[in-house]
Length: 64
Picture (cartoon, rainbow, N blue to C red):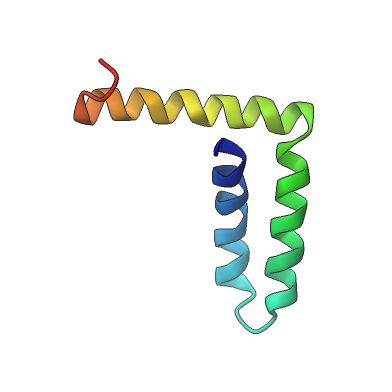
């Protein structure tokens, strides 16, 4: 699920900038998926996962 979050984060700015060319969005999403499977992408996904867990704990008490 975290890899999908990284892909979504990468696709949002591209979707905003490339509204007229959907192929750019698709290519960036596929690139983000492969990036999420590499070692640096996995580390970034882990950091985002920890940040999200900390935010949920702080705001909603989830997982506390």
